[in-house]
Every structure is written in structure tokens, then in C-alpha cells.
Amino acid sequence: MKTSLLLTAAAALQIASAQYDDEQPRQLRGERGLVDAPASASAKAGKSGSAKADKVAGDAKAEKYSKAAKPFKSKAAKSAKSKSAKDSSASGSGSGGAKSAKILGKSAKSADGSSAKAEKEAPFAKSSKSTKSSKSKINDRVNELEDEFPILGSLVIQTVVDQYVEKDNTSIRIQGLVAEVIGEVTGCSGQDDLQTEYSQGVTKSEMVQLCVTKCEEVLEDCTIFRMEEATNADDEISFSCQFHNENSIAAQFPVENPVSSDTNLTEAAFYRYSVFHKGDELPEFQGCDVPVGDAAAGAALCTVARYLKDNGFYGGEWTGAISEAVCTPILDSLSSDFEDYILPSLQCTLEAQMEGKADLANCLQCLINAGATCHSGSICDEDNTVTKTCGDYCPSSTEYPDCVSKTQTALLCQAGAKPVFNSQMQLGSCLNADVPGFPEQYLADKGNGDYKCLN
Image (cartoon, rainbow, N blue to C red; front, side):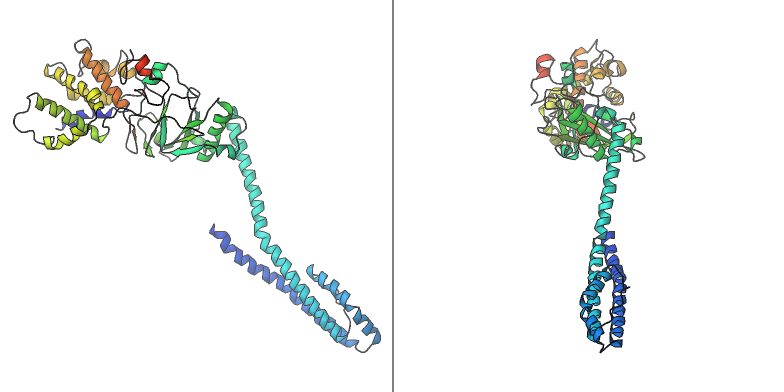
């Protein structure tokens, strides 16, 4: 993580489902064509019955037979539903033949109606088969995930997943001086993260189910997890979940997804962050209230210019790119945190330079290149960047021990600044100060205070 506020001053100083709806009408038109054909055959059967009835007209036996035609024709109607026109022996009177044709016509209509209804329901029958197939695929995928993550056991069902609310564009930080002074990571955070590889092809919804399963079934009292979605240069995605509960000494903060990768040590090109919680959320991150990013250069440059002006190093008007008109609103906007934690380092390093014992511009540039993380060792340990890595330009611990301490505080303030996570940068977010909402003021009680090395 680049310590942008103090450090970017160096650069400034150096430069002065539509398919189904379309298919359905065609299916219905087709079914009508199929039903119309049997109806026509039935009509022909009716005519045949009428011709035979005319042939035996006036015959008393035929008249008797004609009286029996109705029940016989009723059977013919039933036969029409199964598309059987084979019983054409309806030999009765002319009126009986006409009635036969009429009844057969009704049978054809009935067959048309029931066939149409069956065909109309066919898409839904297909949909049912499709649903069963879809469920089968889902079950197969669940089995695959359970095989890939055997430590989780059986995955929880969707109703359990739905209990977790996603807060998008949000991340969580546990690292920093607070965790170091406690000596442990609390509230599920000490458990191993759950991670996937780019090559596994796990989707976000699948990862949510996996992480909820670990939170619910594996970890004790887990109610919160942060999901990190990393995308590499080939647009492949991997996931990582970090787990917490309501007692975790951790703080959450807003981000602007997608977030730029802040190191060359990772394959990811950018990240997306979100927090899932069941119940209460974690405390909001507070942080050192100082400018970061592009705003840092102007603040540092104007601060040094004002110091030089106040101490008589500028003669006449304070003009140019850092004129008093430009710098006054910038300096007036700076909070007391800037005055408390940043300004002392700039002043003492400049004073050491005036004595030939330091080079402010090169000191700051060296610290930029060295970088810093949320682990305080690179800033506070014996082999720290101020006196070791950048010892040729920054004040030495033997001649200017107080200035070294002030510079370490400035770096811790910058690392613990209010987070700015967006597509250009990741700045701040380290827990280097006590956070309102934590059960104790750990740095005040067990450390040396906010933004102060512990040793």
C-alpha cells in the first residue's frame, strides 16, 4: 500500500424469453391442421352411412335398425376420439344417416377440442421435463462442489443462504496496530479463509452458498463474511471469503467497485468487495483524517511552502504554482489530524536538510518506492524503511531520534487513513487507531496511542 499523503510530496517538490412466445402460435396452428383431418374423415363416414340408409329405405327391418342407430352412432362418436372410422355399418333410414353424420361431426369436434387441449398443454409438459432436467443439473453441480470442498460437508439449502444480506461496495479490515497489540485475531477471523482458484470456474452464487455453509456449519458463532472477487487479465474469476462474528475486532468501510489491484504480487487485475451479514454489522472504520491520493501532493507542498514563508525563506510575495491564493483554501481544509500526525515529520525532516543531514525530496521519494502494508514491521521494526532502506536521505535515528519517530507516525497515519478504494488506488484502511464501537480502547490502554509504534 503506497503511503500517498506525505510521500507524494516528493514528486510535487521535484517539479515545483422471447423464443417461446414466438413458437407457441406455430404449434397451435399445426395442431389444428392435425385435428381437422380426422374430422373430415368422420364426415365421409357419415355420408357413407347415409347412402346405405337410402339403399334400404322402406324396409321394416331397416326401420327397426334405424331406431337402434342412435346408440350405435354414440359408440361411433367415442370411436372418433380414437380416430377410428372403421364402423361404417350405420345402415338406417335417410334421417338416421343424417343424424349419424351430425353425431360424427360432433365427435370430430370433440376430438378436435380434446386434442387441441392436450397439444396446448404440451409446452408446459415440456417445461416440466425441462424443470426436472434443470433440477438434476443443479443437484449434480452441488455434488461436484461438495466433492471439491469436502471440509464443508453437505451444502446448506437456499433458504439458509437467503438469511444473509449482501452489502455491496463494502470491505472489512482486521490488520493493523490494534490487532498487533491484542496479539490475536478475534471472532472467526483467525480461521482460514475459503478460497477458489481461477481455474475452478465457481460462480458468485455458488461461492455465496459455499461461504454460508462454512459460516453456518463449520465455524462457531459466524454471522458475517467478506467476499473478495478477483478478476485476472484473462477475465477469469476467483473468490475468497473472510469470516467474522459480531465480536470480531474488525471494521468495515465503503469502497467503489471495481477496485484496482495495489500490488504486482497478485495475478488479479482488479477486485470487487461485498459483505454478507446475518444480524448486526461491524463498526464503521474511522481512520486518520488526512488527504490521500491526488489531494496529498497539494497539501504537502503547500504545508512546506507555508513553513518556509513563515520562517523567512521567502522574500516578497508568495507567488507561483503554490501561491498563497492557491494554498490558503487547501491549508484551511486540513483537519487537526494532519497537524498532529503529518506536519511534525515534514518540519523536522526539512530542518535536518537545512543542517545538511537529510534530503526531504529524496527521503520522501525513497519512502514512496519502499511502500508500506498494514503490518507495522516495515515502519516500526529495527530494519524499518525510514532508517535502513531510506537512511541515506531521511534523518538518522542517532542524530534525530524524535524525527524518526515522527516520520513513523506520519506513515502509520497514512496507512490508517480513511480508505479510498477505487479503480485507481487502494489507500488507507489499516487499523492503526482505536475504533469507536470496539469493546476497549486497545492502543490507549495497551499501546502508545493512535498511529504510534508499539515498541
